[in-house]
Length: 439
Figure 1 (cartoon, rainbow, N blue to C red):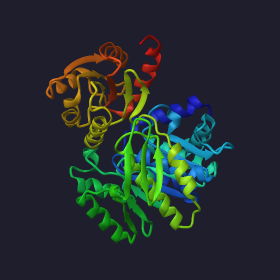
Figure 2 (cartoon, rainbow, N blue to C red):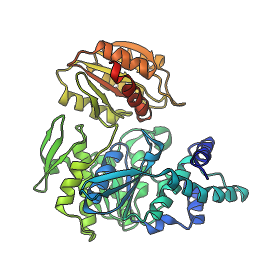
Figure 3 (cartoon, helix red, strand yellow):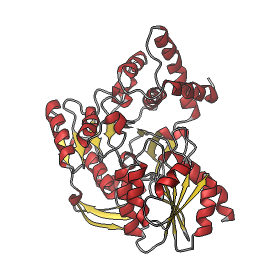
């Protein structure tokens, strides 16, 4: 099987849509001999912060010398980004590699005939996300990873990653309003879906502080007799932010992370708490690895600075909670700067609420239509943006046009921020790099 054939098979499965449920993925994995049963899995659910948290956990474990697999969604900059391996190299640096094209081919060559047999027997064809979940688990089993970190795709209870039965531990990042059409229209309903990853006797850790969310998590843990560790942001002391790093002290140890944003302290806290759970279970992880792993952690597309003079930043904020954090980050780093937004969103997001939060800070808002079938048209977003604040709004339609308009407007001291959806950050980054020499 060629890489093109493997990708074509996966892409063709998009026609089956996105279906929550475990019947098909359970059948598929059973016919593949359940590779997930051989993996030590850290399962991570939540609305925001999953990517940064899993990136930090993987970096720490790799700094200790473990081979770490990581399955994320959505991929932003490369299809192969969905499955990653992290390890320490001969120079004691943490390095990351994506699943190889050969790895994709080998996994899909095993998966495709199983899918065909299932369909002949009356089962629904697996969705693309179910195929990719199976691919990730097969690849990580084949590579014999020491730990596999699985990021929930949507919700938790009925997400394909929840086919696993015996994770080492579960981590739950911040829970807020998103995907309400699938998960429910209250925080409690959404929290119940996220809590669906909790397994009998498996330790759970969270840094949520909303009382209604904590009540749901406590109830789920009591029902499953799973220990619950609740971290508080106050556990971090000497927390300081700069455009170079975020620094803090935790349990008497000073740490530094290069990930920027006022929310990264909380993500680092949850990652460190998860590492401490693993230590309590007997896995050797040194303080030196914790310190070095945090310092070397990387995660593109989350308040990532691509240029200075003027600043050009990309961020994946795409819901209310993420927008609130992004607003606070801008106020912390750039309170005296003129802000120019490039904004593109998916039509099923609460873009009105995002604009309500973000628009008052903007000098200009430039709207685009992301290259995605679920995208909101730029002229509709521009109409909505004009309802908020007194900033000028320009419908640029395309990303490349938006970048040109933004740089024509910006002075050297200004800040250009592209945000609104993870799905178009790759397009923004590629277009920026093409134009960089002419700006």
